[in-house]
Length: 107
Image 1 (cartoon, helix red, strand yellow):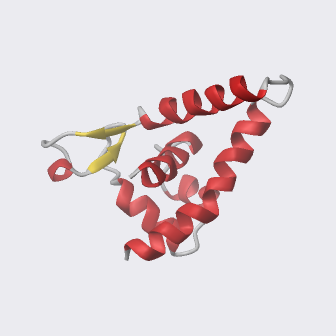
Image 2 (spheres, rainbow, N blue to C red):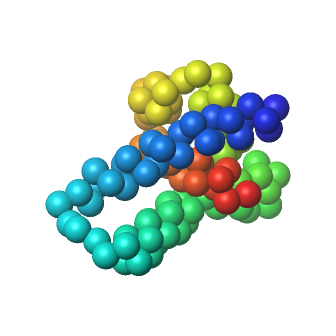
């Protein structure tokens, strides 16, 4: 199961990079500053992932809303796009799904 999730993580990391690039395309960064800005963006995304023993038995969830990171990664591994997930789960934002990918890449 995790092999499939890792495959989708590697495929979708480009989406995270594109999102970062388009969100900040009007600015030109120095290479070191660009690297630092990207790290700060990923750290900001990771703050959306919470772990609480009272919620979903301590599994990582999105913003404490009982949406396990593992489930979102399974949807992506099954072929759903980020837009499909956002339509299915109206409480989620695009950054929440990107945070799941960043969390999986970090783990």
